[in-house]
Image (cartoon, rainbow, N blue to C red; front, side, top):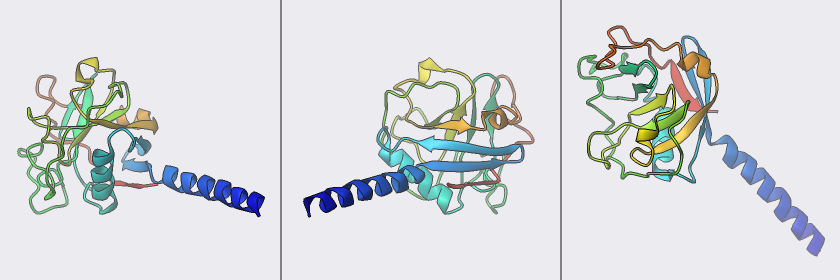
Length: 185
């Protein structure tokens, strides 16, 4: 009986770990191809939860990459003004909006801002992240422990590299690429 119980616990933990792990992978579809992202809920649980909630409800679908700086990062996620299929879409305001949900408190982590890292975009207030995020093209150590990093591109970074770059000074993109879809894997 004891062996059966131990075997049951072992099998249950393996299955639940596998299910939990699958829930922390996302597929970002771009016109260039599919990007696989791994999320880190143990590091930034509230940011991961928000990201998955917005993604799985379709809020990121059609949202433009409104600020893209070559050699630095690609920013997106303004579900209010940056959603090209929404009546409130306004490219000149993209980057100033968020979701209807409350802002998130900072979850600064030990995750370094290296190539492919996803991090929460925010204003000067560390507790102002909402729906916007960015993906690093290259290492940006000056952002470490200043922004809430919560995931990383693990496959398809070559498609992120193809995202249209913006003005070298501001990053503003006049004819931006957009997220086709973003969902849990």
